[in-house]
Length: 204
Image (tube, rainbow, N blue to C red; front, side, top):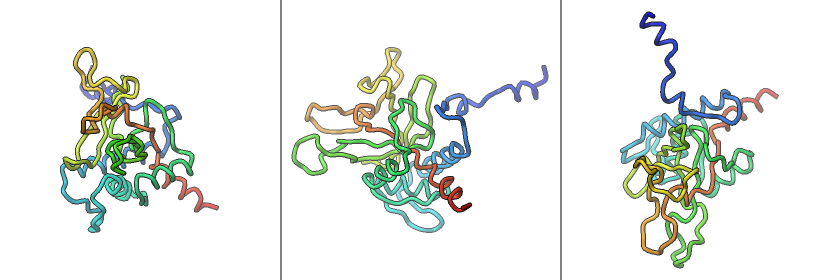
């Protein structure tokens, strides 16, 4: 066989890793644009989109990635969650779509009362999803814009039996509660679909 024909048969690993419950659509391409935009911010100390400085916190990074992907989005972790619910794109599938926003509870003691009653304290963007359900996330945390891993099939296990990293530590402290990404994740929102919905509504 020619080298060229082998290339045609080859599927890039990224494409193999993505599984959609719904049929692939224009929206899933939008999700990949959001993930690529988030990836472009890794290690950056500032968030700038089209020459405009964006808010440098976890939800600011989410909004900046969507804006860079051509999707107007603004808000805090709480209001982004409400938007996902209002749009009907909030879900709890164990394998989200690339570009989805992951919502977390209790990543820190926001109200400083010593209890785990802090809802929607953090957000991240799904970068990749592997066949075994391992999700790579991009987030803005205490160490800047970095990657995390999470596996909703094994939410309370840090690694697999063969040593593969399944869940990152997301909460620091010594209060003996859950600390891993999979344990603290509330669910996901496919906010990348906003643009397609807006374009469709403009047709009427």
